Structure formats: structure tokens, C-alpha cells
Amino acid sequence: MENSLDAGAGSITVEVDAGGTRLIRVSDDGCGIDRDELGAALSRHATSKIASLEDLENIASLGFRGEALPSIASVSRLSLVSRLQSAECAWRIQARDDAQAVPDALPQGTQVEVLELFYNVPARKKFLRTEQTEYRHIESLFKSMALSHPAVAFRLLHNQKVIYQLPSVRTADDQRRRLAAICGKSFADSLIEIDASADNLQLTGWVALPTFNRSQADMQYFFVNQRMVRDKLLNHAVRQAYQDVLFHGRHPAYVLSLAMNARELDVNVHPQKHEVRFRNSRAVHDFLFRSLHRALGQVQPEQQIESPGFALADRFRQPAPQQSGLGLYSAGTGDRSAMVRERMQSYAALLNPRPGAGPQPRADETIPPLGFALAQLKGVYILAENSDGLIVVDMHAAHERIVYERLKHNAEAENVIAQPLLVPVAFNVSRAEGDLVEENNDFFSHLGFQVERLGPEQIRVRAVPALLKNADSEQLLRDVLADLVEHGRSQRVHDYQNEMLATMACHASVRANRQLSLDEMNALLRDIEQTERSGQCNHGRPTWKQLSLDQLDKLFLRGQ
Ligand code: ADP
Ligand code: MG
Image (tube, rainbow, N blue to C red; front, side, top):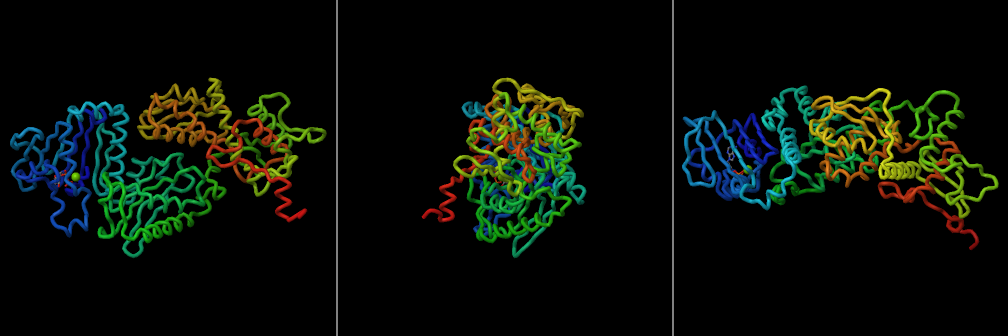
């Protein structure tokens, strides 16, 4: 595909059979190859893209090492058909036998056909994953090519079925359609457009609103001079720009293109050319950070998440009146004390199976390890007093840990209760995600979900794990799917169960800025005491800290 783009193609078709193991065919309408040069195109380290030393310092093409065709030809049956515009007919050459070029029929352009990949390298062939997995790798490369080259029309077929058909982009509407086709409609609906320039740098593209965040870094496309890169410096600048609007552990989604003078850039530092080196990396980093930070800062309040720094909050789409308690419980109407009592009961039932749990009277009781709640600080911390002094609890982190351990325990005991949704939720996913839902249905029920596929790109959730019944079920499932895409398929899925449960726990946890009553706080403290590993949240941060009287005395130089 890179060769086709280098050849100035206006349209590229990729056909794949059996995940590419049987056939990969790339056809383009680019400039074509002269009959006399077909042999050279297949020989090692031969390229038409570098003519002088000068060119080497100013690389404008995607290829330049002359490695792709000969390497592929050495591990497959490869044939090359090409026709210059001026030629009378096309010519075909077969790699691996010294046969001469023979006339062939092809309109203008080039077609490279790769059959039986690794047929002669059985050891390598053994390492091919399933057809679906290999296909997904191809699809993901295809997507990044299509995102970085909007003017070019692309088609992808798998097993003769058209999967993507992307006309060339001429208008803003076309662009939106292409983004939606590749990244999904919900991404295309929550974008901030970026268009910034400084000195010799230009940054264009889209970043998703912080509320559209991901549990995996799986929707991050960065192009430098239309080449897909995964570069630490660039990643760092983007992360930093999102820092105060994105919750810890979540990943932003973006499609960004940086254009710069090729002389300012070395693309020849990485075998797959994934990393690049900038002549002035500091300036690139600063420019990127500043442009994105400014754009994210201009997000209007109505687009904005409820509590900055806490992108999780928007997952709880249920109406959230001022006094609604823990995120776990539906916010009913009615008088507050009854509501709290009801919540306390369900809280105790969910997380505290032992009898007599729940709000505890203070009088005449031995003081429990984490003591009794005094107050809530800034909607984030619970302050409590125990026999040693002061306890400070990060309530979100602690609650997340409790829910996680609980989910894990239930899953291990095969005791997950699925809660049917009153109204099943249908939504759109990518075809790959749809496949995953189908392939892993048993695993989903094991986690407490009932999900079905409605169409190639639509699924419906009928039930969710009872512990998470009040989380946003669409967002919850999207995140589990993103984890699945990341970790691969069926057999391996169970190895990653805990990571998925952690993702899920995140959804159910008390959000910041929720007012809790003293009883609710005490119930949470008791739960922390009951929960294994409760000293740390799932992201490894501490969930609570003790400040002993001694330490407090020192702070105030008492008794010295
Ligand atoms: P590189 O892209 O680094 O030059 P390749 O092995 O990928 O090396 O390709 C070798 C040469 O074959 C290219 O330099 C180009 O001249 C020619 N070539 C390959 N694919 C195409 C194509 N689709 N259209 C026109 N020329 C092509
Ligand atoms: Mg090439």
C-alpha cells in the first residue's frame, strides 16, 4: 500500500483471503513500472525513490530502502503486474523463477499479488495467529493508511466480501464519513477539530472530547508527513495536554497529522519506520502540547464533563441529584433519609455479606482499624478517626478496589448474577468488535453479561452484572470490548479476565464530588477493612493513609 501511495495512486484496492495467509492482492492506479524495470523492482535494495544524496536527506516517499518487494517475494509466491500509462499493454513478472515478463491485461497501474505466505518457511508459518487475528492486523494498517491519505479512495475485501469502501474525500462531510467508517460514529460525533501552525510545523486532525476516552490506547493515530508513527515524544506531548482533563488510567482518542519540512525529520531510525527523529524535538513537543492544550481548554461547558479531572463521571448517565449517594445505587426520588437507608441496605447486601453489617453505632464499641468517619473533604477524601489518629481515604480508589475484589470473587465462584436491563440497549460497534461478541459469548455470560449480535455492526446488551447495574451499560461494554480487542481471542480471554473486571469496577465506583453521609462513609470504611488488598486501588495508588498522633504532633512541634 505504501508503494501504491508513493506511485501517486488515486485509488487502492486490497483483497485478502483467509486473513492474508492464502492471498493478499494490492491493486492501484498509480504511475506503474516500466517493463524493463520489473526485475529491478524485485531485487534487493533497489529503489526508484532515491536518486541522490540530496534525496536521502529530504525523503518525501514512504518507501526508500528497496526492501519490501524482495523480502515478501522470498517467503511467498509473488507476482507483479504493471502498466505505464504510455505502454501498450501491461507486463507480468513472477518472482522466484527467472521467467521473462509476459504481456498481461491491466488498465493503468500496478497489482502485487502474494499467494501462500510463508509456504517455504514452516517455522515462521507456525507463528501466524488465527485468520481473524491476522486479518485484524491488516485491517488496522488499512485504517491508518486510509486516515492519513484522505484524497485517495480505498477498498478492503476479506474473503471476497467488501469490508470497507471509502470514496476519496472532497468535502468536510466526506471527511466525517470516513472518520465514522474507520473510528466509529460515536468518535466522529465527539470531536474537537485541530488546526494549528507555527514556524514550519502544521498540526491538523481531530481529538475526541475527554469524555470519549478509552480503556486502551487503541484509537490513537498519529501521522508525521503522512506516515503512521508511534513515537514516545509525540505520545508524551499528547498525554500531557490531556493530563488535567482525563482520569488516570484512561486513554484519549485522536487522529492527528503533523506536517513539516522533510529536512527537519529523520525517518530512517527504526526498522519499521514507526519512530522518527526530529531535528528540533523540543520545539515539536512544545508546539504539540500547546496546540492541544489550548484546543482542549476551549471546550464549551455544555460539551464538557461534569467534573474536570474526572472523565469517569459521565459514565453515570443516570440523573444525579445533589444528594445522591454512592454511584452504585439508582438515584430514586423521595425523602432523603429513606433513600439513604435503602442504599445503605443494598450497600451492605452487595458488599458486606456478613450479618449485622452496615451503619455502625459509635457508642460502646471497640474502635475498628480504620476508625469512624468524621467528615468528607472536597468531595474526594473521607476523614476518619481511629485509635492511632487520623485516617484519610481516597473514596473513589477505595470503592473501586472493593467492587473489583467483589467481582473477582463472584467470577471465581461462578456466582455472577446477571441483572436483566429493563430496556435492552442496542448500539453500533465495528465489525471486528461484533465478531468478538459472537466468538466470546460464553465468556460474556461468565462475566454476567447477556449480549447478542443484531447485525454486522450492531449489538444489544440484555443483561449486565448485577453489581454494575447502574453503570452506563453501553460504555461498560465498549470498554470490555476494547480490552478484548487488545488481548486477542477466546482461549486467551480468561487470562485477562481480571484486567477486564478492573475496567468494569472503575464504572461502578463512587465518583468524586458525591456527598456521602457519615453512615455511608462508615459503611465504606468497614468494607475496606473486609476487602483483600484494599490498601491499593486497581491502578496501584494507595486507597488510604494513616496520620498518627505522633506524626501530627511533629507537624506542630508539640512536646519537643
Ligand atoms: P521501496 O518502496 O523502498 O523503493 P520496494 O521493494 O517496496 O522498495 O519497491 C521497489 C520499487 O518497485 C519501488 O522503488 C518502485 O519503483 C517499484 N514499485 C513497487 N510497487 C510499486 C507500485 N505499486 N507502483 C509503482 N511502482 C512500484
Ligand atoms: Mg516500498
